[in-house]
Length: 377
Length: 78
Image 1: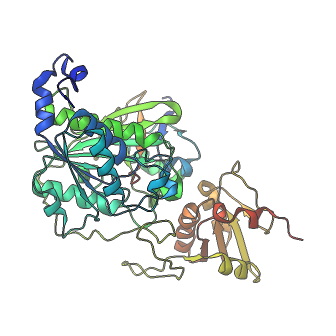
Image 2 (image 1 turned 60 degrees about the vertical axis):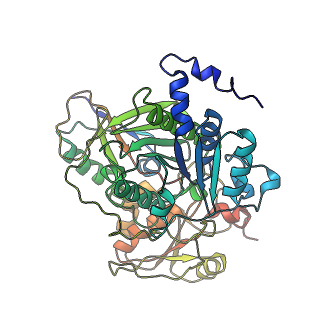
Image 3 (image 1 turned 90 degrees about the horizontal axis):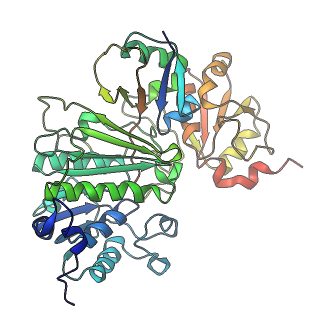
């Protein structure tokens, strides 16, 4: 096919021209994560004529991905994302070169993966990968276009561009276990990563071509529900040491059934500080414990959340009002429940601090709605 | 002085109970944090950034009248 006019509409842009198009064509961009963010990033960069695209993702397409990962269709379920994405992009644009890496980024392979690329785009879905990619970019001197989403909100930033700030200037350390819910736990509106990923693609194009001013030393936040856009400035921390190679990038999330690296573990365990974390209960454990004497069941969801629990005697106290209630409870066992198992875990931590014996229902009410709605017979 | 309205992002809103909250005016960001921790103790367990007038604040900073304040958690989702 004669490709001469392919980029005409962006070449005629003021301040862009054939020259910027050539810069795109010569650029090599590595996209890590071919999920909700990765799909639009890859699609737009391939369409825009970025000459070399790398796709790193160790996951396979899942049915629950399709509402937001628009590169994939039903027939792709079960196939490797990196390979499926590469194949689709090749048919979108035969003039560009696309590499697929069906592997997870690790401290061992990350620098090798970066070799030969000009820009890295973080489209991953977990903190360990995000911190690893950031630190490796700082180590390697590569700019990082970063985006992240949760529920109805997203954040975008450009890190490590010509000595600018990086992710650790915003968040010096990884959040602790369970502090932040993932999309699998809290959910995400399908279009949202489309918005944030498209913004990441624009930032990549700006870095490559020099057009406009990228989000350097700035964090953009977007909240879809009220169309709130904020651009926040931050100052890079001066004189910080490079940390790549000296930090652990082990997953810090609680095990959940839906997490890709998750294992099923419901027993209480001891963390590095030596304090006992609350016990997560599966359904059998939950049911058994509710039959014991001296056990209080507390629903920590907001009052408007459904379904209402009918099957078990319980107290309903929203998480943010829990402190007052806990001051009145001095003994006995408490089981916390919430919609997904995240807030109940937070509540458990709070109560465990007060020396109470606490449990949290893993997966929350959402995962077994029927069992909560039914009135006891 | 007027009360301060604070924009609360992400799952911090679950703790505060809404995407905005309002507290009595405080002199600086350290007192702000203190006040928030008293009112919403669960915030103590969270990592979040405080932005004052569209600038992310790391050190104690005076809060003027009609200040725009936002609390922002990190997101990991992709």
